[in-house]
Image 1 (cartoon, rainbow, N blue to C red):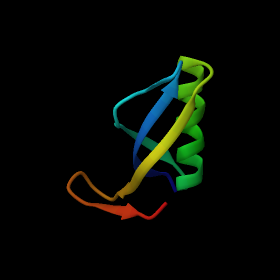
Image 2: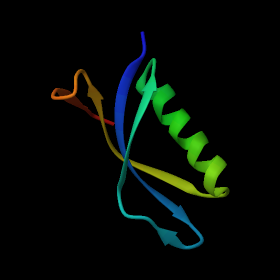
Image 3: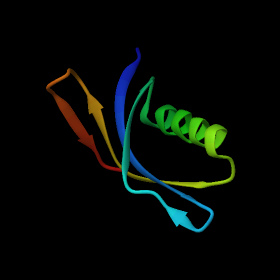
Length: 69
């Protein structure tokens, strides 16, 4: 089953850190969602570090559950 994970993260590159951003990632598990997010960011930016701040599981448009990471 595919779930929707909302992940808040910052990207560090060229001695800069972005503000916290949010992305919704469809995946089978939180681990797959984090890996998909990291792969996509590195594809777009190149050499960088990703810091994941928080994650939640979206059950519906109005309902989501925070996940301890």
